[in-house]
Image (tube, rainbow, N blue to C red; front, top):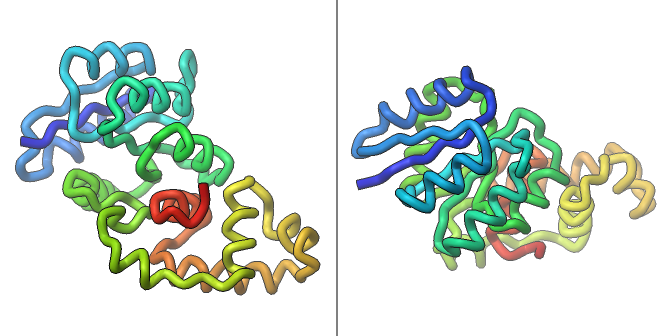
Length: 201
């Protein structure tokens, strides 16, 4: 019986996500926390199948909260939630042990779909980490890998282009091809997918 713990600083966003999670068939428990400390305490007493952690948390921040949760329970399924697709934030969260990134400004329907998929192991922007065949199908060119690594380092398309001696338009072309191969729509999900698929570390 799936359970969800939602750790979001904003009461409005927290309530919106809670309503989405409550409406998912089979979900039996939806807990909420307004801070990383509260989430850690709640998880210690009642572990959840899926934990949503706000990228904008403070004391501790979202990355540190994720690291502490996964440190205490390596099997914890944590999704970082945010509205800023900053690849540097996503990279830090993935290194800390998060399994994916979820945009908080999705429609309620899309949020519910994303949460339902996450509860079955299909993590947002990450592909299915257990699907070895899917991993084999991902064949990135060296340029695409270079662009992906640049994204993971939080570099802009212009910065990546200068480093690779490419025009910004050429970088954008490589990025579009990269997104298509990974099945994602933006940089944040490309970074998350790259980590989950073992393409970057």
